[in-house]
Image (spheres, rainbow, N blue to C red):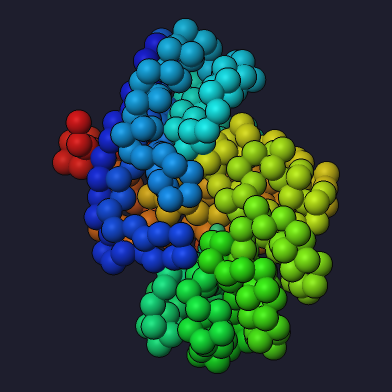
Length: 366
Ligand SMILES: [Mg+2]
């Protein structure tokens, strides 16, 4: 089960409509397919979705760092040597998405070689997650209409609302319109992507106090250290740290510093190996976790549900698993489907992800 080849293949698939949020917007999924081949003929796959405005990686930088730094570090290692692989990949700072896709492709190869699903190898708690749908910036009526469509078509009852435009007019109006339009049966939470200041966040959360929000996520920047601590201390809902906790050390600092009270795990940026560390740390700290979405395609969403369903703590809350619905096509031969508000992890072996060769040939850019 030795790794003989690592490939980083850039591909691009357009979105049906651009997704807009406080830290940027996305029109085309310019992702990288990572393929790991072993000497027993197994091919593991995963997908890297760059987010230049959040982590500083681009499609070209992901291909470059995998080809020039990461691939030479892991070729020749056995896929069971996960801690050795992790140690070698961790020598290079930054590049979380590139490192994570390679890590997950190796886990896929390991699962295929052993004949187990990745979910079972990680923990095997359950085989599915409830789905939370992310509502990007739009007019209030359009966001209510999208939520209603997601509820009626896919049975989704949990919605994350992107805020961070203008706190006291548009943002709170959108959330109020959603609560009034969708009723009390749905779960709503807000994500500011650092778009508000701490004081704007405090005032906006007071204005929305009657709307029954479940969480508030990354409303203001973690670098506003005292401001965020002041905000989090006065909230009566958990404050999710997302892009501020890419490593276990960052999670420790944010939680012990009182600057967050929950965390988001995104397999796109922490893979399976580091996500597992973050999960165990969160369990020890006694905080809630939400499986987040880095605007993943179907392969990335399959990785998220494979991880999230492996543990009790991550499967307790709905996972953000529906962004792939906004893409015009995908690479998987057998498309993902959300039924009755749930997404099922594949029974494997590995991730159970078969890439359609015709689609890859069509969308690849190299
Ligand atoms: Mg977020």
